[in-house]
Image (cartoon, rainbow over all chains, first blue to last red; front, side, top):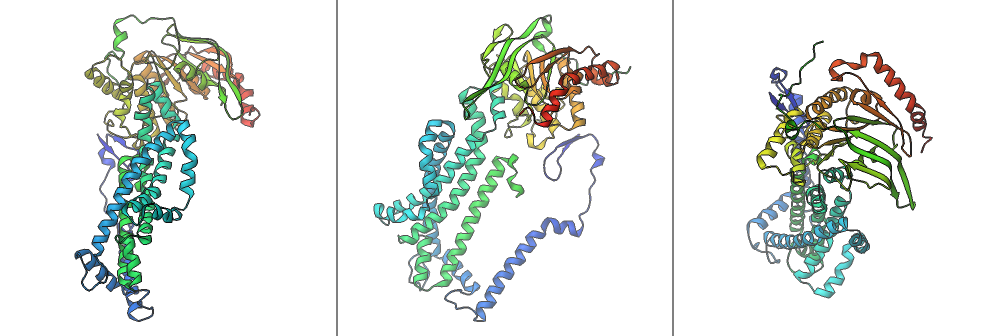
Length: 294
Length: 290
């Protein structure tokens, strides 16, 4: 007897008859169906950068606006492998600024989680906390956070405190709202089942509400990372002398378009890897939500 | 007639009762029970059940049948201790119901399995939530035994999302039986399961209960399901639910194996119950009762 899962991984079947399962060879179209999208993506991106290179080499675009793809990658390589690029008027390499931004972002996200998860859970669990906090949560989460930057620059100056505050304010609300929603939408029948089998109030939270809410919290953090990244770049563009935002600002000031595009490329990679990581985490923690099917 | 023997070994499944002679007499006594819900937005309260008097005896399989929204679920929730009576009383084993207890367990229409727990962990959950005075070994043994009883051996480590509807409900049944409660409450447990699997599951439930000797209160919309399973069928009328008639079903068991649907008595019972609910079912179908 063996347990067999179908291609979607569900509906396990107990089979006494292994002869029902025969090895088959994949046809070309089946192999293509499985791996084709990777090949298309690889060709697609290669073509994209080649056309970019050709257009810039042909002189169709002012190199001030669009550098050659090759020079962007060269700047990126130099910026990530050295600590201070030679001949640059900007102090610090891409790597230095990247680490600075990541440090700020991590501190900000950690604080946002530390504040956001408990407040969201409390709001979901207690009607009074919910009533008191919800106007502030909705007001702040609907306010464009960039509007607050001048205020915090005024309060805290061009300091790390100011940048971290902006990251926290950007990231905390999606985390609060998702945790809150998770608690509020916990399936009634799961709660009823736990009650019937003897759960007290505390056990209802620890054994039903919290595990149910966990994937919500993770998607809250996922949104928080996205918002936090916006927050940190805005904060660094506004003020400060370090970080990727500052580097974008400085490269624009010094007409170094290759550097600017290299930084943008780094930002794309960071945010994609963060999102992929949280998606993987969610699929791992809550496989029943089948996020990995997307 | 060639009756297939039950596939599970003959080990005494209800360990505590094996030694003691099976007591008889009333287990659930509902007297003039009226229950309902508060509708906060409309500042009203809605009576779901009115003046329900019903006595369920030990080891009896009672099925409540009636149209949608007639308050059958409310009755079962009152027995489970999830809702409090407004008027009248409900007693289990001679004590008024004051909340859930280990003497009662429930099977849910939507299975209500914790999706983050494996089959084994779901079945073990009642032991985590209530202290039945069992040792770790006894609990492990029971979990193993009831997973075997519902034919899910080999799936202990599977998650509910990997199982079919029928298999999920087997987990739900194992979870309800594992604490060996006196009373098994079932709220339309097979309503979401396809018709063929559903008939098979009815036969399975009959087999499980024959093994364990529980008192069962079972809700369904299906007259066939009611007759197939019940010792007595309580026909519930539309809002607020009242018991119209209690019909005795004296058909041979195990009914799944005997194919009782072929018997003339079956047709008569079916017709009798259908006449009781017909008008209300029609009204419900036309939306006239809303």
